[in-house]
Amino acid sequence: MSPLKPAPTKAGAALPITGATVVVTCPGRNFVTLKITTADGVYGLGDATLNGREMAVVAYLQDHVCPLLIGKDAHRIEDMWQFLYRGAYWRGGPVGMTAIAAVDVALWDIKAKVAGLPLYQLLGGACREGVTVYGHANGETIADTIAEAKRYQAMGYKAVRLQTGVPGLADTYGVSADKMFYEPAAAGLPQESVWSTNAYMRVVPELFAAAREELGWDIELLHDVHHRLTPIEAGRLGRDLEPFRPFWLEDATPAENQAAFRTIRHHTTTPLAVGEIFSSIWSCKQLIEEQLIDYVRATVVHAGGISHLRKIAALADLYQVRTGCHGATDLSPVSMAAALHFGMSVPNFGLQEYMRHTPETDAVFPHAYSFDQGMLHPGDTPGLGVDLDEDLAAAHPYRRAYLPVNRLEDGTMFNW
Ligand code: GCO
Ligand code: MG
Image 1: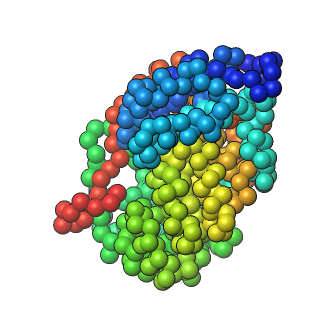
Image 2: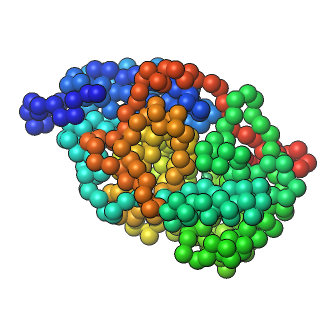
Image 3: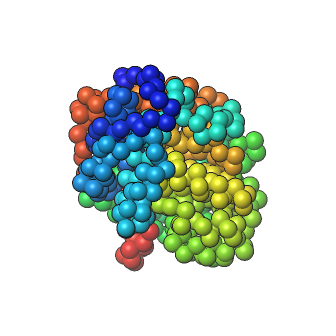
């Protein structure tokens, strides 16, 4: 362990970066971690995992970013962000922004360790007792899905995402054999799925009707469309779900065209969430300013780190849009911890996704955060409160894996 609080030399003195290394590990799925070390021996961690395209970020960091870090002052987080963003000339994009995020989070980790404080204290302190999370209930049938949701209720969850198999389709997004530790990327070439909007549009309202019958009204219910509908179809699904009061409908339509959400908004009062694949504030500026969404799902690791995500949250707060950060298992425990410190400290926190990591992953990334009664708390360890066991990480080497792809019944390539 590095010393948490070195004797300060002089207030405002520089803390030179002496090392920056990238660790790739696959304790069941691939994770990329940046470790930045300083002259005082304090180190920080940043997640750099881009599911299915991991090695592109590894190369971006190793070939283009790490050499720039050595000798720089670890305390100058915003200046470093601007240097990496503006200094690349090529702005934005998932690979570059994930790499910048890793540097940003590692530097925040270092600053908080040096201060001897859990990171949320440096971000303005706690705005709440903990970060309310939602879990993933899924099953092949409606009955299976509701049985899973009951398990989550029994564990104390206050919010659950419901995904069910679509009759007639061989497999459906969000439905997995391994309930607690779902990971869609698989080794080998991408698995191909077949999609029918017609069949899907019928089963989801049935699922929600049955869920309200059996689970009652005290639990928040969510659903992820995973980019599968057109705006007018999404408007219809949102309207069909209104009687069951979903907490949100996620990724109802692809969001490259932000204005497309006007159509959905026009037809339904079901709250809308979007943004797990957004790389920056520019992906959601119009969505927020026109109040076309209710929850922005941009996350620390893919949207430029804590520094940039705080700017997105600040813009969203002006328009009563709340946060709903992505928290699937392809975000490592380093990202989960960063999301929790962020979620503790922003005024407009909404809800945090929480898919549990496997025991193998938790062993590689020992962490201070913990779950209790539907909330996660980041813990009070200085910094992010996450470590990396490098020996254990080395015992789980990288394995190439791809997310599935999706085609319509006539073979047309579609959105997964
Ligand atoms: C979610 C997401 C995930 C993604 C996965 C892709 O809402 O959690 O949609 O299930 O599919 O993160 O890497
Ligand atoms: Mg999603």
